[in-house]
Length: 353
Image 1 (spheres, helix red, strand yellow):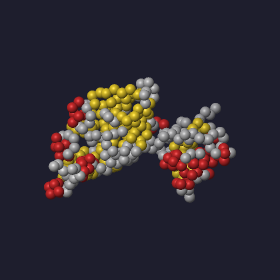
Image 2: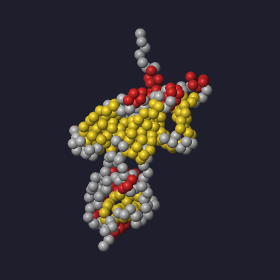
Image 3: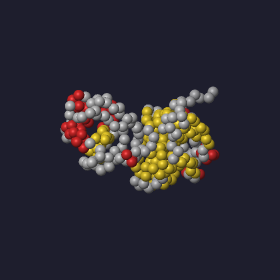
Image 4: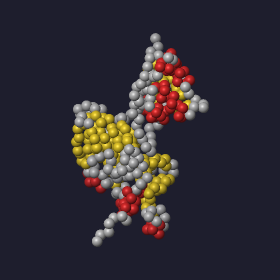
């Protein structure tokens, strides 16, 4: 007896002559979704849209869906694709990462029921390969101007949050304040204390609002190491080790930034924030960034502080010192600089009498 079950995966590919708008309209009609839900479903493909079918039923689904211009593949529960395999999306830090909430189940319209047995529903937003799914469920709102993250904590889960960043939380959560990193953490520009929120009395959610206006992004760490500029850390799960790293007197003093960097390593969820929007850059050989625009970078990159031009440029161009990166890795920059904004705003301060 064959107990193999089939999942239907929406690939995101469209039949020839079908536009994105037409495809969204088809999804709306077939699954009775809103325009925004249909758009999210197509943009985040590949997505599993139906699970646990027998082969005959799965084939009927495929024929009807593809007849409407959408391409799908059938995937067995043993992860061996019956049609062409769908590659799981890579774990990466998009410039503006937003986790899509699960699409609510809905019964299909009558025209769809005539060709398909039982009810049709959209499965929760999961990667095609379940082994690639990791981390807590969360939602980011307000980016890139005023990033605000809401994190769902299962019962017993703890989350480390930068001091004063908690904005809302369920009554199931219990907070404890601990000292982290000692004097070096304080010198890095971070608070000497960090808050730990634990869902002790049941699952709950916590809303986190960073101090500065700007973007907020998430990265799931898989044993890697990131270096963060002071003030960039927002929150992390217990598997992430947060410590300060001395970057040298010369680098710290001449960069105009902190003498310390924040070193984040381990496995788990990490949230970062910036002043302005965040842009992710793949560095292949070398790259130059103003020291005030750096948010974070991967461990594989080496850097040095230098002038962007001669001494005349140093004092009169307004550019000052820059950070020169070498090697290969990822770099995250912010579109605004706190120092540059402070200098601009200074001219509007009332003159002392």
